[in-house]
Length: 592
Image 1 (cartoon, rainbow, N blue to C red):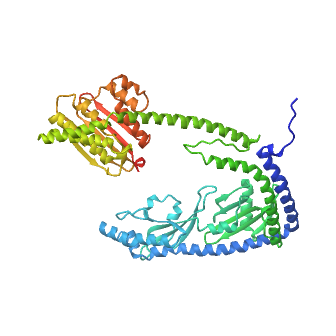
Image 2: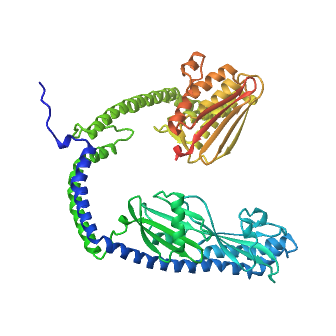
Image 3: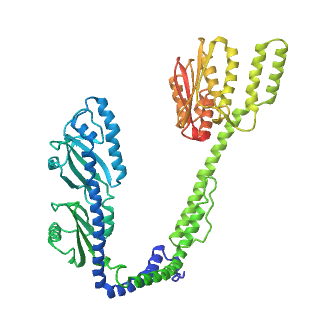
């Protein structure tokens, strides 16, 4: 009979280990000591906290009133600006005068105000009349004003702060409106709308110290709720009673009981903005760090937490150490290295995770490394086989001999043909690298075309249109020659008429494009379908061999994808009897 293993802390789950450590080492001592000190200082802390809060908020409200006066003074800058008044009155006679004066005097005034006062978010003047050109976003027609009509009817010389309701939890949307009159203040000519940024209210919000267990209500002068942060839901009747009591009471703070919780209710009024702020805080949150023994409390709790945290760290490290080791091991994994983790594996969640990770690594090594490397070797072998067909050294040496004999016999045409063919083989034999610059690749194609032009004479006309930088663009060797050869041999040479071959090269920010077009025989529709299917990977390449050739383009396409990535490749467009265009799309990032 198999004996059951005894209790072992190391084999417990991580959740149980963390729970035991937290309860025994952190939770019980901290809560016990905190409750003891809390009961000793409860009532005195509450009173001191409320008084201190009122002093801080009063100072912030004074600063808020000063900031509000600064924002209100912006109106004077527009009212006393003759160019703005002249524009709103329609005094400019021509469009040139309107544009010149607006761009010279009015728009810089808007920019100056925004840059000099970070509390101003947006400025706009709604024009009472349309007197010509409308410059946005600074100016707008009065018909576009979508707010209360009472704001349109503000008397001259009177400004008004308005709080627009945006929704619960969003920033307070403050606007200051002021009518702008003509020079004699006889007629309304515009309505100034100043949008205030949340920076105006931020110091006040911070001084109110609204936390995740507090309620905040902001009321306008009509006792409408324009903002709220409500963590403790209140009924409509309860809120109305609270708002009414805050507005009528002379006291700015009071304690109430709600649902068995003792709450601190505070009311503050911003006279300049005509806004009332009502804060509800749970009393349990108020006393922290504010009573007369706060320094002793903070120091004692800090020392206790430090000692207990050290003990808790020793326990937690036994859990996290294996996770950190596994994480460090995982950072060693890359596309060519898939090591198995061989550390200590226990019978818990981390152990199960490690076992699953090792299984995944083995599978990835099989799929990514084995299969991918086999495919790379297959493609490289196909490329090497194709290149080996034109590499014999004796052909190059023989051609050099033929060229010398032709020159000796005064046959320049044969000498040039031998020399050009020799350059082709020299290009093939120059160096062991399988890559070159696009400029050299183009020169090799030109040599090949020169030989074909000698053979085909007037039947072949070739044009180059190169609109890209080719000197530093690296590409595989013999990327273009098979494409050009297909166009000449299977396209132009198979018809009796004069053939045209066009090679265009251009680029954009991400890709370089090469288009080889001929006016030859073209490709039949069914054959073209097979070639396209093979190139995009939806059909087997053996179909091309079975139908009598075509593997050259396929090999070039595979080499392009290997070198430039899957976003690159070849696309063929053709019409039977009208010619063929073979387009190469090459990603620039792979060539850098």
